[in-house]
Length: 330
Ligand code: PBG
Image (cartoon, rainbow, N blue to C red; front, side, top):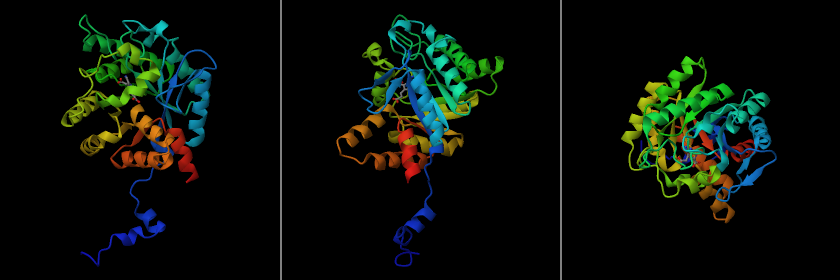
């Protein structure tokens, strides 16, 4: 029935009826905090392109974990920022049981066994060339040899206590290979969060500064393995394969510019769907807020709510701690 019998503004008139018809409610339980870990003790390094986010040594990381637990943030996604001395052509530091990333997991699990830990599985922090995989003489990232390295890396992480291993590399077949190796090693509870629809995005720039891969990568792009920004049917094929190979959850990345992909993935598969609001998205909102051009709290909560509305079950975000605090005050 049309106007005047139908007046959509009636329900919007008061806070109580807006609350009753609200479809999407963001909570701290939807968020995953993202953190960068460096070796050493008492280290805290600012990241120029990500104001408010620091690379911290394990002692500082424990403080970040305390805050997550206190605020009801269920999980922490961790990325290593290893020094140049451990980088190599073959990235072997990635599966060193005594390496920084494995020690970080043991320390976090000893302190907070109930806080979910998500380990990044990709070679870029550990390679001298900054690519996510191993390269041949022409610089091309080779698939199958990279998958073998990723399997070793995932096993080392499962062994160290990561609850989720999260391959962010976009090699073909890596989910199946990692799943088979985890089963064979008895790690039947280790979850796989597959970066299934990961785009070759320019929004990752600040992250590459944070983990120190930007300089090494130089002009080298990742277009031979990450997805073309222009595609979305291809994202569904990637998700379908990753689920068939044994992924427990799939991810779309970046977030806000890719919500059409999120909606298609969620509608088609109904699987746990994570979204990564990436470093460049954080940098944009932060820079505008620092200039006084946008209201940080309002735009961050709006962006996160929009990502959830589009179909995200969980959101990896550098704003997680701030957002959880704001939600608690609300
Ligand atoms: C690399 C990786 C990247 C991000 C997560 N893992 C960057 C890249 O693919 O070059 C980006 C995250 C962000 O921008 O916040 N394996």
